[in-house]
Image (tube, rainbow, N blue to C red; front, side, top):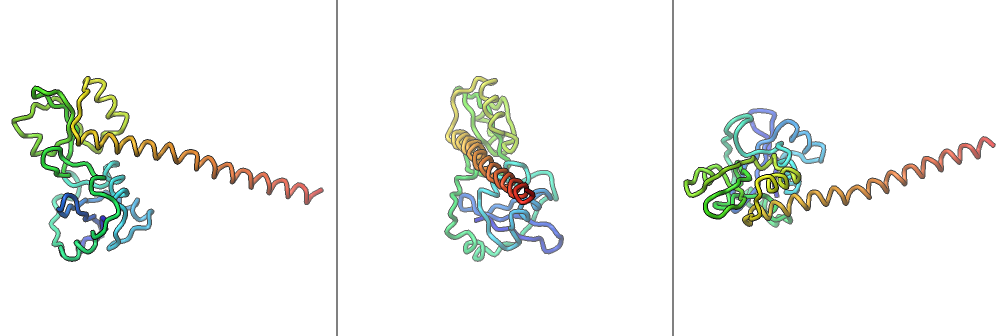
Length: 207
């Protein structure tokens, strides 16, 4: 499972997790740290991989580029192996490069190299001369709506396994939000019912 850690030299946090048998560091925005605090996550404590994925999807957890800069961290691999043991959520929950399985700086890309299809690639594989990339979108920006519009506008019908997995992830995320609506509606209905009961009781006491 991912584990939240605090920098020794400053009051900021980062996340370590295991993906494809490698220890991956995710830096956090201030908003990302706030979301973890709101969820009750504290430094040194493991938390659900799905929560880290949600932060990644919102851009509040990232593995590269802008932010506090490069991070050099000394990791006790024995301790990390203990922290990540028996992770109930699969590593496949996170997207990865279709070629090398790297989770870094992923883009949804349109590839034209004899076979016209969509793929997900890391920076190194995007530079590969074997690929002719026409369009490239940073993966954290790709919502379900943008994903579908991208395929429609570009006329893409074929997708490799990395894109099909991400499509399933976006659809599952969309479905979970719709499934939550009836629950919120039921809770609202119950609260309204109790409010009306209280009003009726007050009125009957006045009579």
